[in-house]
Image (cartoon, rainbow, N blue to C red; front, top):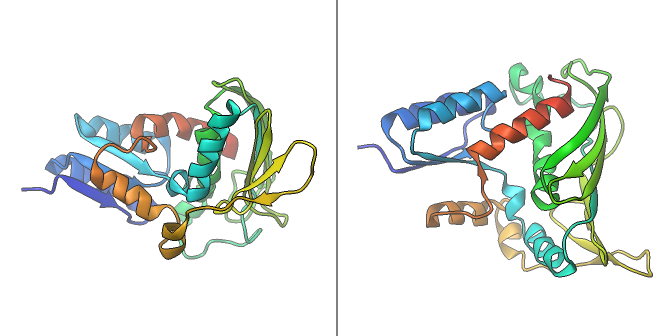
Length: 251
């Protein structure tokens, strides 16, 4: 018979088709590489074929040691009050020629959604927000510049910015009443305390992230062990895709 579990890590334009075929054979649990599909409709189709099967989307940055430590410290501080993130792609303005044109056109979903997922995972889901996008690249007609702001379901305010024609890199900063937590790069965590501008590097128990692709060992172990409390469920990703498509100028 079919396996009960499957991890799907094919190219982005094959994700939804592969997941659907596995579900049709009776696979009951799937860990599906992000973003799960190239548009919301592909994820809705997976949900229709899933029945009682469980599908989660692999956003490995939720499992970084840096993310886990920030999660703990944020709870200790009483929660996130505000946050900001930058979603400039690096290297700037270079076409990701290693992937199909269909994937390049949806690069915000295929790649940039990593940093947006992390921001809203720790900061709360956006409930009242607005955004703007402008410009275009030869390989990404949707937009080249992105900005927006709003409120999350936890009451935090947020803002973001990205310019794919300028130098830059991904980053996220979470603010609490006591600290500023800085992810730049996302694998590392720095903290700023009241009364200082100095960023202190937080010591992490991150040997797994240094020994393997960061986050993937912990994410895979959690999937194989059963329920992963950090996982992005298919339902959550369908909601998130609407946000990403709006941010990216695809809608």
